[in-house]
Length: 155
Length: 421
Image (spheres, rainbow over the protein chains, first blue to last red):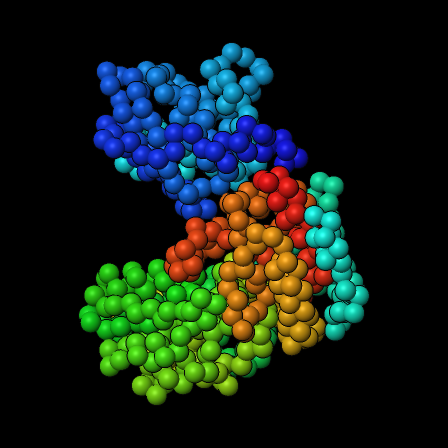
């Protein structure tokens, strides 16, 4: 696959200028995500009020795929109800491991489909899903998420 | 970028001290194409490729020689046993060990290190004692000792390195103390390529009566090893980084030490007699080889040793030094490239980072240029912490690499730079 297909402009842009980068001063929810394979590490802080994600921020050290995924995720889930955010986590994971094809049916992924290219690169799937695992952990009250054990039918 | 293209031309004056194309032809996998690009395999530090004579040896064993060893009285069992023990003699000669019984077959370097932790560490290292390792160790020469420390209340002492990735001998001398029970040190750093000053490390330890274990996983394919000249007490390596199969490795240990160590695993082949009242362990090396070993892999390792000694480790090292020098020159001229690990004495490894681009992204784009490199922390997170990096890109060379594969790496890095500009 050509690197332009994976590293689309939108991904390169979010990598260079990540949105919602930093940490909230008094978050209601918080989780760390690590990918022990490559050392990627991100930290999510959320402000959840009455079941709605009011604010969300991330920081950390990671590759372009992971950073862009985190940046776009924060933009997509801010203002969403927790159950809608959880559904989006599931849809994103399904797309990344290849179960959900963005072109084949209705979904809520929107611009997140720029990440669909990772499903052809098994070693990079974990980079794209790490922020989403971390979000899942944060809203489930877990402090740590890891990409170990991610079920990937291509491995 | 035009200026970069001009520096990436291969100097015709540098040639391998052997028939490089003829040698490459013996490695079928090197002919692969990755998409549109020829494969440039620069991940030999993780695992090297296997030449046809080794592949043929494995196939022949499986087709005409296989049975369980050290047991049957029938033809096949005797043939397999002779081939397996013949491989042990090849390893003995390769390392110049004094005795055949000093060569123990393991699953690999990690297994060998764990064997010493269990057999020597658990028997002779106790509360308040100290084990010295270096900053440059692979996790497999750190974690077993940490497990021992946790279990026994002993302590880990770490030899620091300078900004070039060279171990600091003065600091090491100060770490050696009355409670030091073992020095466990790498021969060549897998993340940086630094060659450890083993002569000084071993002499200083022995002056205090402390045994030295050497992790030779990254060394044996690139540096001639003579365990008697080194006078190390343990030396270990893996078959798959020496053009042999995975699943087989070696622990060399001085016979006197191995004799007094406790067995690693219990089972068949490691006993002389078993009763519910008393079990008598087998002699070395069998005391440490419980169960049916990877027979084919051991025999394949023997064939790999024949292959590599046929080329000559010194000649391979000469050529790999040329490759490393050329790659170092070329990469130093690329804007944004920072070399990590610039020790005076290095073998085969070039670790680097590219400003503003994570090593994983570098690796993915290089893959499209057909270039296989390792990206990440290389199972050496303390090294990464020492240099303040989460990860690096690592190109590592073998005797079959060509200068134009370095050019292919440089071209790939220029592609990365354009994409992330």
